[in-house]
Structure formats: C-alpha cells, structure tokens
Image 1: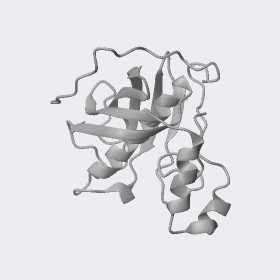
Image 2: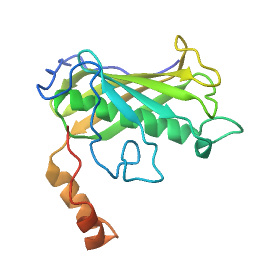
Image 3: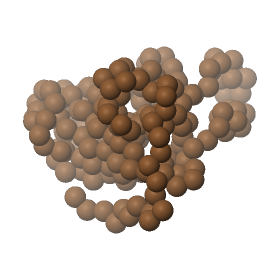
Image 4: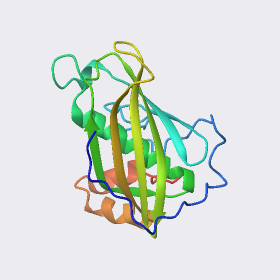
Length: 190
C-alpha cells in the first residue's frame, strides 16, 4: 500500500484514560445518533467496539447489502466511514473528544457484501491538539474471510475539541430547535 504519510518528529504517546474500559471491554457509543455506531440512527452502520491493549480498539462492521458500491462489494465511502469511526473511537482511549482533520485510505482487496470486517485502530501519538491514528481492516467472517489478510489500511489526524464545538455547529443546523431538542445529549469522549 502506498502513502506519503509522515508522522511528526515531536510526536508523544498520550496516557490511557483511567475511565477507558479494560482490554476486551465493550465501548459505549459516543452519541446515539452517530451514523457509525449510534443505536438511534436507522440508516447507520451499527458498528460495535471493544477496547484493546494500550491505546487501541477493535470494531466490527457487518457489510450489509445496502452498502454496495461495485457489483457485490462494499462502497469505498462506507469503508472510509468505518475507518473514520474506528479511529475516532480509538481516541476515546485517551479520553479525548475529537473531529476528523484528515483521513486517508488504501484499498488493497475487494470486500464482499455479507462479510464481517474487523477494524483494528490505534493511536500513533499526539502533538498538542492533534492525535495521529492508524488502522487495518480484515475480513473475519463470511465471503472471503481470512483474518490474516489485511484488505485495507487507513491513517488519520484528529483534532481534540470541547463540547462547545458541537453547540456552535448545532446552531448552524437547518433543523434548528427541533434538532437541538431531540439531540439533548451531545457526543462525549466516553
């Protein structure tokens, strides 16, 4: 896979948040209306996540037929969204609420519909508000399953934010007060 991704020289490894679940522990969704993991998002991907060792998470995505791009395979945008979700959830390991600043994907193999992807995401390090992450996807169940083969990789840069960030964005929403009333709980870091 190819990339010009270079990590900064002054990268440091942040500490794992005390409130982050133990390895193997199920991670809570960060927001019920999230397209990636929310249970109040009927059109969403319903991804689930568990904590790994250190600053890593493992996520699962059922590659549903509605995610079709080319004949019989996942749409690249859905895979990109899954990587974005997994790496963003990975930032929960340091207790950070984040937004995506940069995301790149390398697609190595076609990913068939009706398969199950496992995405392993981890933190490479941080510099001030920037958190650098990487991830790999493998087909672990269904058509083409081979947990030893990486079918796609991703690298991302996330920026830490505060709850005020989402308050400002919600005010700009065309849904106005209706959205604000139904979205009482803002996204959180954990």
